[in-house]
Length: 261
Image 1 (spheres, rainbow, N blue to C red):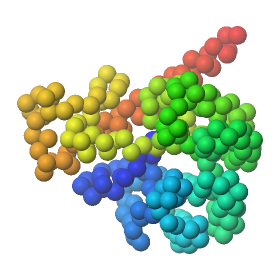
Image 2: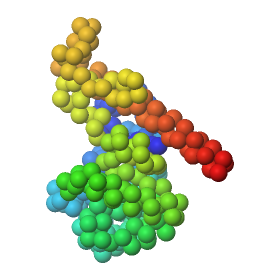
Image 3: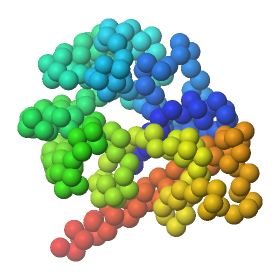
Image 4: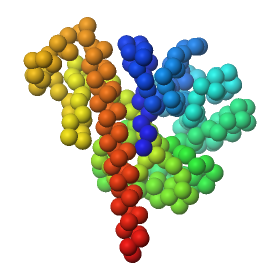
């Protein structure tokens, strides 16, 4: 499982020599020239969510122009999706025609709400890697969220399609479903709220100043915020390494069970 961390530019600013395995970067936030040294794998997001909610005013032609110029810098590229299914599919076609690149389609929870189940089937039949959008903004129950993800994996497994979980970093889901990749901004939260994140006993533990030993207290000084940032980043990487090992073990157990049947 890959984790693409957002806003890595913050880490690169304070720790320019830090090696980053996977970075999710939003197209509108990029400078004309941006530093990608020591980064192995970059996932380009169109920031369709912000465009869908009118936070940004961008046209798909801007995205086309950007990709035509910078496409070599990215390993995975997402479609510019909108609230309109027809417009989203039109953007997908235009991007692929104008750039000759494989553009990753996005299936949203809102598509599931209106029972457009055929759309995910269409995506999985055509592409070997598909994004599925998260459902937090719908305030769904845990049971409904599981129905949605179960449906997505049922279709994906039918076509042997890899799924990327957009904003899906809840430990319970990551240990239950074999996502190929996910993305997160959560790793920045503890840095912003003056807490530290540590990896202990196969889980992430968040602490504030009252819970830390005396030798850790200096890390809460405002001018040492970059240390909290780096510590949190390292904790998340250790946690994802653990999840990788967890899923390898799960698949080995599954294969052994099938052999014994």
